[in-house]
Image (tube, rainbow, N blue to C red; front, side, top):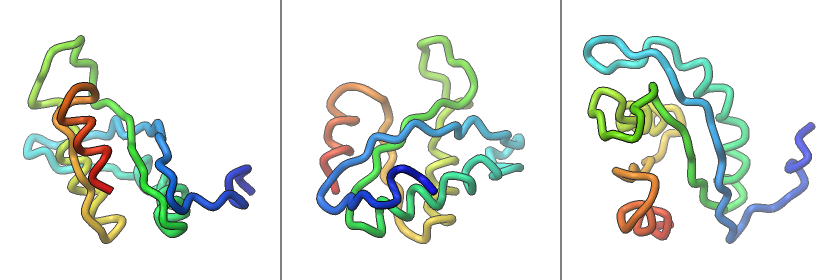
Length: 105
């Protein structure tokens, strides 16, 4: 049992580091979502309590440069399907877009 199972996330934002460095095919389709499915109980607990989740991950090793082939956008779209609710995607992990997206819920 998780140490957070008795915590109520209502009204709280949880920053969660996940390993969504998942394999993609040439069309950016996820070929193995095992890592993503493993996070669903945690994400559902937070969301089910009425909290919000801010996820941190990476895809590949972009070495500080924007590389569209390493965007987590396909991962966010897939996660939305797994959760059955929209996943808001920020174009960067810092700056105005990240701040605005984190305040949307």
